[in-house]
Length: 329
Ligand SMILES: C[S@@+](CC[C@H](N)C(=O)[O-])C[C@H]1O[C@@H](n2cnc3c(N)ncnc32)[C@H](O)[C@@H]1O
Image 1 (cartoon, rainbow, N blue to C red):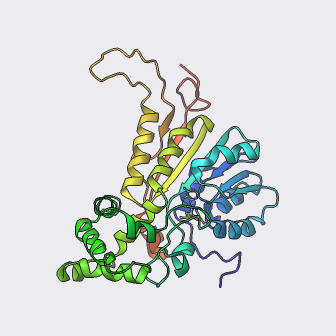
Image 2: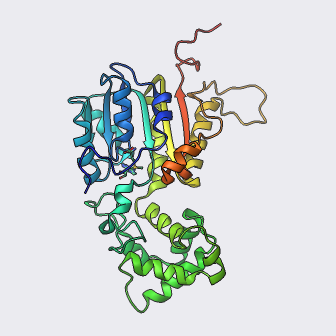
């Protein structure tokens, strides 16, 4: 059993996040995916305990541990049991209207993956749940797997999981569930593994159920919808110079982030056939990571979970579309 101060989750790209956000005395920062507070603690420590933080997590259990760990900085962090798409509610309750920086570290934590009861992992048998917020009325993975139409299951597994065998796996699930309800992670993992042709099973680097489990988790928790909603509304809350850093572990999430940053940086939205700009929109942000930043080999060796991480960072520009503090020529 881990104690509160021994984190069972190693924060990914921590130095990079702290470096980009450069937390300052009195600065206000949002951590939308508090988890075990690894990034939040890094930000507070780097400010000498003088920054302020609002931290959100959908997972009560993670929040409880995060609160204990954040007690290192009494009065500096306010935490909320909320999805990050509800960040406005948290800011209103904290009495904040602007931020000096924000971070999202998407996906699940090692703590969630390691607990069989949460049903995220095929490595240990547990009920097919996968809800990050176990107190919510959201459908569980068990409901999805046993009730969704074949086409929906296929779409989830193939498109969210980047699983080329999505159709075959969905068909196997539908065939089995006609005879028995699929209730556990081990049973589902077995069904998926059997749907894999033996040569593909042998060649696969990961367990054949890896992509299917990730896809179901993303669907159960509406993970793409969450990131879209957040990115649609966050910009007005960022002070000029404030940076938003997003770590994603999935190509569909990374695509959402890349696309949103590109639109913010573009400014003008006139059709490209038009030679003179008439929309007069100034860019909202500049992109600080032209290509996503990846963990170093050393980090990947120390923390294999970081292997698929991609970090993108954007900085809010001033009202004239220039970086904060830069004077017009
Ligand atoms: C990868 S972990 C974050 C780890 C954290 N950065 C750390 O270093 O300890 C992701 C966390 O975000 C939470 N989470 C994922 N999606 C969320 C959402 N839409 N709203 C709020 N929390 C979310 C998960 O419950 C999990 O605890």
